Length: 120
Image (cartoon, rainbow, N blue to C red; front, side, top):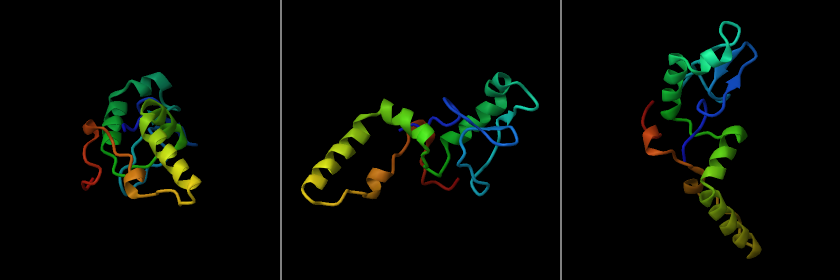
């Protein structure tokens, strides 16, 4: 499932940096689209720097999900979370624990985002 950070939503840190999400870490990459104290938001959002950051998001190795980014994707690809929820509801009704197999936790990404398991 495609990760929409920086494409349909954003995060502004306390210093005014416009980021694609709030889960970025220096050890992978951490780059701002721009600062709202220096330029208007729409100018930042439509900038070449924002495009560069969006390209980096597509290759982000973290595979993390925040509620603001997970919810729109879950709605778009409802069959995946719905299947998991239904299967685990049935499991719980039979006294079995929920399946937390890594294949269910690994949401993957669409092909344009590359292989998340590559070295970044």
